[in-house]
Amino acid sequence: MKITRLFQRTMFGIFFLFLLIGVSTSVVSIYSVDLHLTSEYEENSRDIAKTIADASVDIILNRDLSSLQSLIDQFVEIQGISYIYIVNDSDEYLAHTFVPGIPEEILESERRVGETVTRNLAGMGDFVEVSSYILAGHVGSVHIGMDVSHVALAIQQAIGNQIYLIAIIFFVGIFASIWFVNFAAKPINSLLDYAVTLAKQEAEEEPESSSKRILTRNDEVGHLARLFQYFSTVTDPDKLEDNPKAAENE
Image 1 (cartoon, rainbow, N blue to C red):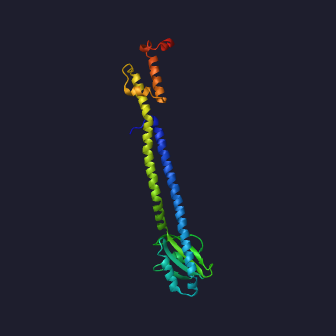
Image 2: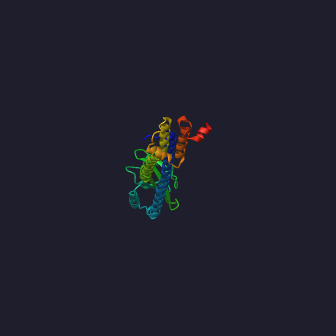
């Protein structure tokens, strides 16, 4: 589909505008969904950590570590949770879900209960860890790790449909803009053809139907076509006799 030279810059401007809208909308959408889902996962994990903390008070006080281990094993099956471990007020590990043992990165790390901690565990991947005190910290704390890749996958799935919709709107808008620009340029092309006809002094012949249509248009193109016809009549010596007013001006 050929685009008239007059409208090429307009067409490129429309392309750029659609691209800018598509990119900016995608960036804002990705950022918003990422922020919302990450916060939601962290909040849910904190709620689970608090639930475990509340349920494990009596178990820890009674030193029933097998029941404590059974408790955290049930929660680690929840989607998104990768590991759970519990420490007492002396920083002693009471129960955990690591196999075969607790990674060195966690053993050597400083406990920051109540804060969100980002961890990279060798051979396991990247994790976001949240925690909760048990009995206001007098008994210990519960720590839960979420797999970052699982959170990222959930974010991709959430924004996937939005990106597809934006892409469809972008391509449909591009083709629609091309059609509308060519629709607007069609009268210009007709006017150009009519002007070429006049320049070749073919206006004496019976006008073609397209010429008749352009002369009867009631817009800027029609006005220009009639103006072209007038000037061709004025500047043509053979037609001065048919145009007394033009002859007087001469």
